[in-house]
Length: 359
Image 1 (cartoon, rainbow, N blue to C red):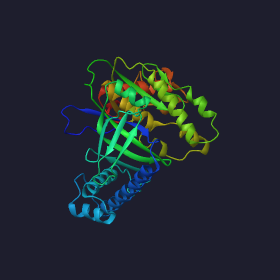
Image 2: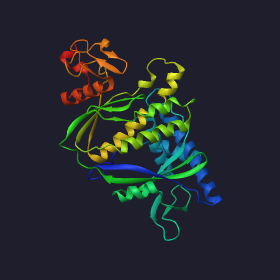
Image 3: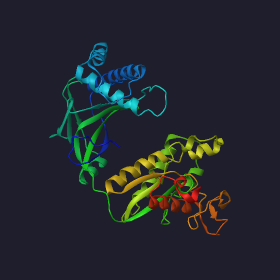
Image 4: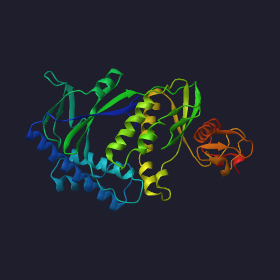
């Protein structure tokens, strides 16, 4: 998700719609590829400079550094400044202490480099690259089903684009914008527990994607198409969910859940189909569009705490069953965990450690 720029008077949501440039002639294709290669090398050059100097701030690079990149790669000052800004964003997004190595050939072009207008011929839009370091040319593109649906739902095309290369195919991402709705003031707080076996289990008893596990069992290998299939099945199930009456959605904060401990090879293959990051990204976008608050909570002991008596014991969790050893309450294990997440939302705390009863 891209944050709203401070210049907007109202909070703004941003999404992208990808269009592959399959109708370009050979000369335009080669010119765009060479431009992307140069942008890739110049961005990596700035990443190396900032990383070596320890500069991880959001401040604009000084002119001396910008001119170094400009002179070395024979480009304009404006393009060099833009790529330096993107290099700083890449470094700030880094989660570990390793220097970023750029593998993808993508770059963002702002209104200094591009204009977008309606096309009067057989194409729908004309993307005009107007120089300032970018090759001067017009890219005719046809609208896609995804783009048409977004425009129908009130989204507008912004002034910036993202140009890139994927599997030797050129593409352009149109940046779509829409005012962000106000957060809901009425409705219930809903907890959600997620795992690769039962999909998503909500505290009101709804289960989304539990039938996908049977499909995962049929996969012999971990391949790209198997991940894409699981993602498609999960998103289709989420699209059918009724989001009315929900004010806040509480989920687990499972940032590094797949990297804790060592698992057997068979389990690793199955867990790789638990696309938690993709699901959280989809939920974040959906909640933002509907005005639903999305809060992450510490999952510590939520699967071992009884949602009725409030006491936790590791003996209470027995596989997919939860049977409290203190009060005898019985429930589906993931449903019990979802109810505990809902309780954390109602209590307004990050985790069970913050409660006196958890000591």
